[in-house]
Length: 361
Image (cartoon, rainbow, N blue to C red):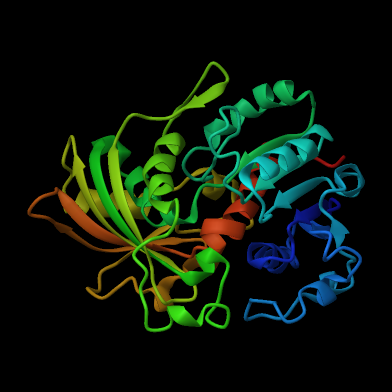
């Protein structure tokens, strides 16, 4: 068997960093060999650094407990120990941009869970089943950064995963207008009910910055590569409302959509059932076999019952029906910290490895 690629997790002590640690435990291609975080955690073992704030229901993997956490700002030293990194830090946007570029300039590929570089023209923002072709801008990015092997690739916002795949499978019918309301879990804020008791028996009708991301990021994903940069699509017109609800994991969306060429209900269900992307073709380790699952039951998908479908990497839909104002309406669901965050980033890294962008140093 080929030796596993050495992975570093920058920001490994936060909730998303913890998800990376869990997902990569026993991964067939990747092995966590280094973890970094803020200077406050540096010098402690990973087990010590997350003591009292481990947020997952599963225990800390044995393989990482004794890894000594390093200072994320020591870029050269950390990068020299790994083949590529996942980045999930909690810093200001300009600080994240500078940190990720610094890592890339060492020749180290960066797969980012952060939003800082999502609109950098030559940084691909990827849902692997939808826009793998955007990876071609990496060559132009490498030239800009002055590196032969380093680059940055990012995953999009977790809120859009619950409805963009379902719409993408219907692109042949040209969606023109989309209204989506998302009902988002508290783990999307990096919290659980112990951290955030005021969310019990409560709904908050505002999540800072989320609606703009939910309306604009799909257009970048559906955009095209022109002159070595990604130009966002001009349609469909999307409007959203994003609501925080008292559930641990899982973002649910209610979606209304108009089409230029209205499909039949059977055509929609067929496209959802048959849809496959590059990860399924390549049989990547984290890829769901069935990307979009439709539930016939009127009360599905439900967040608690269905967020873990395909190990949390699948997308669920249900309640497809014609509407009095729009052509159709439906409900979508995705797991926000698996498909929407760490799992989506791991799938991007698998695609990058399979396509030759990530290699051993």
